[in-house]
Length: 318
Image 1 (cartoon, rainbow, N blue to C red):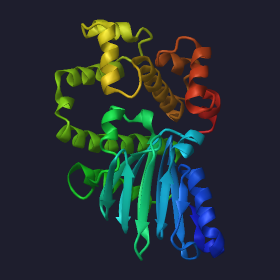
Image 2 (spheres, rainbow, N blue to C red; image 1 turned 180 degrees about the vertical axis):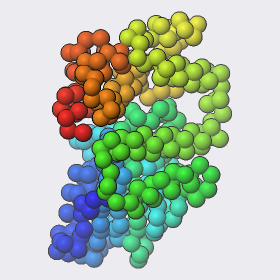
Image 3 (cartoon, rainbow, N blue to C red; image 1 turned 135 degrees about the vertical axis):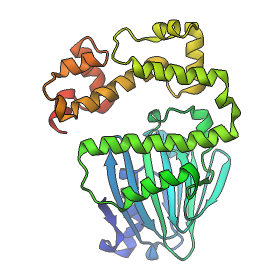
């Protein structure tokens, strides 16, 4: 990991304000306060993983509040998953709250107000994963029910996510951009598996025939992303359902529409191909066509909107 902030290099009266600035820049803006600003200490290390980021933090007592005002001012629409490694931390969001201790996991949403409080005489330590909400293939309203609740990280499937986050936090920075994209996919998949496990235990409708059909549709889309003719109508026909019912299924079980999901998955596949040196012999237009973009200009515009970088620059810089 790369050390981004260490309060030991800053004069005591300036540390809390500096911590506000670094967390707003590298995570999300919040209103921070400490019961003893002069005694406040903190350290932050981060490693980017594509659109995601894993951040290791150690800090003394403080409170962090994200109000509707902060959300209106700046909302990257992130999910944040915290692994508590030391200390006691309290968090509240969506009318739920939990007291978190070592080995526990928690998820919260940057688009909704929350409050987190760290108390005690010993420093707290957290590993925080953040990634765009669009990357999580679970219904947002169901994920909201898990926010600010304690999820076990020392047993079952949670232990796999805990071990992976801890290894990233304790590892070095010897990670290429291609490595980072692969690690991003793994950590988001592990997070999805943990959350789905708890949703399935607490929400039996996930195993309903409608949800089973939804999973078949998602698999069908993944298998057919390379076909230019893949669109909602062909998907509905292939599954012998109406177009209206297809859209209703996505409204119930997916954070974005059918068309948006297809576009994002195609662009994610294209991004991996552009970063793969084994495919350098393929032109950008060819890679675009591989993932359903018949017109190079359409691919270039969509890729730039999705990543913030033109495909040629992305390929040259990875």
